[in-house]
Image 1 (tube, rainbow, N blue to C red):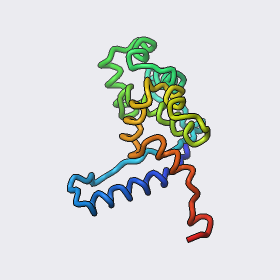
Image 2 (tube, rainbow, N blue to C red):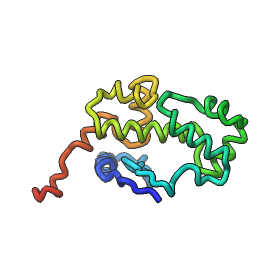
Image 3 (cartoon, rainbow, N blue to C red):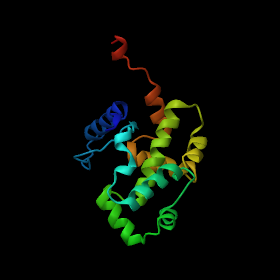
Image 4 (cartoon, rainbow, N blue to C red):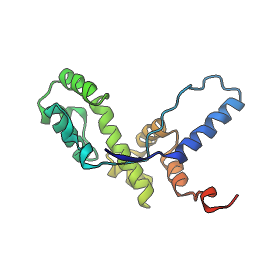
Length: 167
């Protein structure tokens, strides 16, 4: 079992953006918007060793340990010895996403962690999380959260006025 931060700040910003777009007459509004949790705490029971397929478990462990080096799906295929088609099939069956998506998910977890717990520049965060440049990080991050890394950091550091009893 794992616990997660529901990322309500990002959800609020996304909702406000969608409402603004609706009020501006934008007809191309998605009916569903998915927002990744800002942080997931893995417990022992959620360990990657729990996968039935030992090759997927090994690949997942490798991705978790090396995603920010950075690595590519080809690197994962080399260390596991799986073919591209076999790995794709096993990953889709085991976790419901591709190797590339899993690498990016781990990198994004690292980005969120660094943005909320350090004062590193976004460029330094991109490098530490395995992104080749800040523009690519910004694109991937915005696609995942609806915010730029700077906007996300600002949203995470903004005090919750309602929680402080102020109106």
